[in-house]
Length: 122
Image (cartoon, rainbow, N blue to C red; front, top):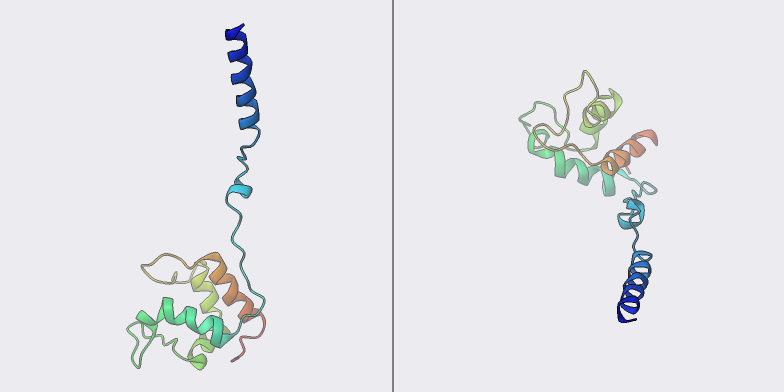
């Protein structure tokens, strides 16, 4: 009798505990939400460019020879398609940032949204 009670007690615990476990990856690690609703040059894009690009593309004489400091300089690279090509690591473009990890997908989406909306100086 004791062995049977022990067996059913263990079986009951195993069934009830295992039913509470979730192994669904989306539930355990929900995807990051990328907010691209209110993307502006001054509040979104300029800080990204400053943080990830100014080491080589900033200052009066950028070491890269390609200035990105200030709206007008960045707009030149937007208009010729080189900004998106470089950050997307497209063929025939130098992948940026150079010798550093690629920008996150969310960061790229924010820049692309700004470009798609006319790359305004806002």
